Length: 295
Image (cartoon, rainbow, N blue to C red; front, side, top):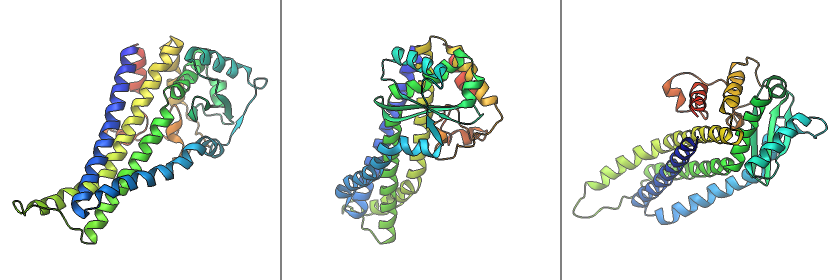
């Protein structure tokens, strides 16, 4: 259990490092092409941050509104509140607000920028179809997302993707508008090589950045699964819940591409195949269950 958590943390930090390295390299390429890299990189960061801050602070309200979720009271769903309160004590975080989506498809997600401003949202289908151990596993998974600051990390990766997209676009525009390449007298051919390398990287960078963001998302799902097992001390509960959710054929009406990545299981069925897995925000259910069964 602890090895799984430590491994996923290391891999997440490595992926974020690759993000930053890609941004630094793009900034250097843009500087070589247009001579404006010193200004371009900070400007790209500022623009991406400003565009992300609004959605960051309002993300929970936006997601809950899109999902047609409503707040609930302890009197209405005492069973849910009892599970949340118990796991809150185990996790050592403030009690998140509880919301429900009136939908028979079982699923759940967490949102909020930090543990003090967090929400756990479950469908009524989840409450109806899960037993106590399975519900605890699901809630502990979402509680782990809150405790591990996964929403903040994923917001950071969105900002980094935005920076990379901006830099790539500026590099391509500089080619179109005849940007000049810095070159020394000793190596006059280096300029042309740099143009080719910069153009290829600028074209591929947004795709590579998206793949890295998806990889980080998958690693955080594995981490939340492992953290859930540590909170409940019963990995089989979450494994059973994942099977039930994955096998359920009822569509989640409130789900869409903008919110699908938040749910414990992607409500929009993923395409099969190794290539399609690269663009998935969730690891395959079979791999998640296998990891839980090894704990």
